[in-house]
Image 1 (cartoon, rainbow, N blue to C red):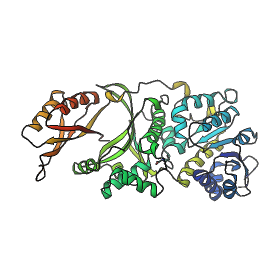
Image 2: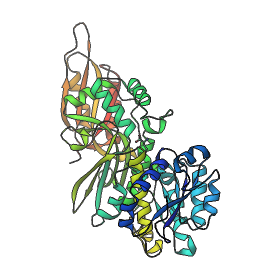
Image 3: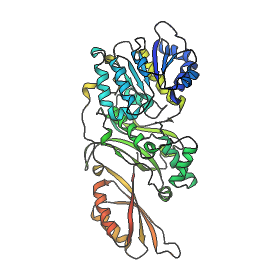
Image 4: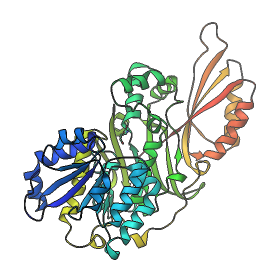
Length: 448
Ligand code: HSE
């Protein structure tokens, strides 16, 4: 990639896998358009990858290829380092070294920022003798959807009330397959792996950790709070039964893995709810109809109302689209990082601590499924326990037992209640001799 003019932004790329190649391709293909927008060229002049042959095959002779990331950081000509290595280990050391060397950083690494973000952003603010460097991360959340820029700039007039998103494509693909084809979780996961959606080790995706990293970053940007991944409630989709997807559907709901960040002041407490879990959403909501590996994020602000952003959450060029947008922002900067739009949307000095409510203090409504003996009075006993705890019932299904069976499923939708109150009532329900085994509990959100 040739420099467009002497003031081209000089970029060093650490890790040229799927996303790195996409960045290279998009910059090369759209460079004229990008220069018209930016006013200067953006040149990837150095690439570090352990697999130098693979890197050279992508970049040809247009950039210097090295196998040592520190050679990129040490190069005084490099203005920006793009970190696409991933993980908390070497990536953290390299990002901090790049910042200490006065380089701006662009990263897609949500795990790193969700866990070590406060340390990294603090280091960035002190770099260059207090003038600061930028650490931008549009690609870290929902891939190609510009949700970070939306929270940082587009919605800046609003007091944001909540953010809720399908922010993991692998799990959304699995849930779509479970619903469409009636597959169980294990079979749908194998299919996702065969099609290349899920990683060989899909733990972070299916256990909700990847989504929790992303919603943690969005919570910091939406509310001006520190990045607190360790306080997030994280529950994946591995225990979700195919029958719950069917029952939810019959009741007018679809089950999605949602990342939710909500500012609340309710009977459970005041603070922030930060949680990832399978969630029933009314089928009539647009977001309930986001299928396959696609992502979507809803943001509710007091002025704008409810908004929805949809697109590809992963993949080479969609993610590159986000990385290049961050490069353009840096290329356009006229003053120091201190004078630029604050990377976390709020001025660093205005970040305020707010308690993240433990899951027991969360207020929401629930789907409950229990296996019961098909005998007189069971329903009355269960509803009386819930009523005694002041938990109001919204809807209920009880099928007749199949021929020859003496048990059936009882499905209940509750109205909003404090989760700990429900859990206490469910202990009593589970102690009933006519309730067999434990009660399945899935949270429900109206997203109205
Ligand atoms: N593994 C992620 C997903 C993509 O399935 O959405 C990268 O964040």
